[in-house]
Length: 115
Length: 116
Image (cartoon, each protein chain N blue to C red):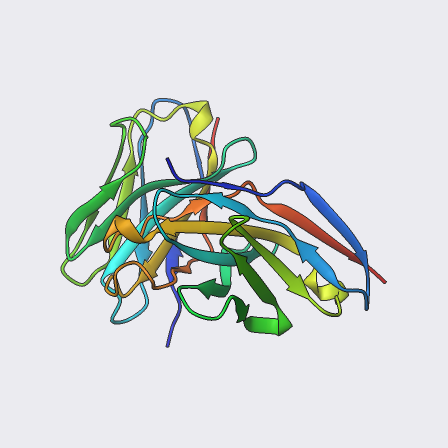
């Protein structure tokens, strides 16, 4: 089985721009979660989608949004970029079932740099 | 609120020696606990998880972890460290009461350095 794929792997943007990141989960997985990783804040949960519905949301401003398509692929969007949005954005997939006992499988991440 | 603490930013160990990476957690109910490893410029790789049952959990690459409910700990261990084990290790928790959410709460991470 192919793993979780994320595109693009690297991205450079300037302040005020917007960006869209893409994630393709493992085949058969219906849950996709997004995390932001920074040296200062560590790994922080952004949101989770399951069967095209947002199931949970972290404590991030409204500039961060996401969606999931019927094939379980997910995108996240960040509008009006700020310098502090520079981070590694990780996508993780799981079956989404089983009362939370399932581990998540992570993609390689998208490294976003905001200048 | 759920939280995870990894009290050591870095752990240094000689190759062949046993290693321990510490993790303590705080949740309102019973936890699901996970360990992940991250190599440079890579995503997180799943190592092992505790769901229920036996307190000693065995995982990938010879790693194991011991769940201790009274001490709210889930320390990662390996009997004999390899240089290739050098990486960033994350402990994570999910509250069973979260009811099907995928959200994981991560510790700050511990860098493991194994020297030849």
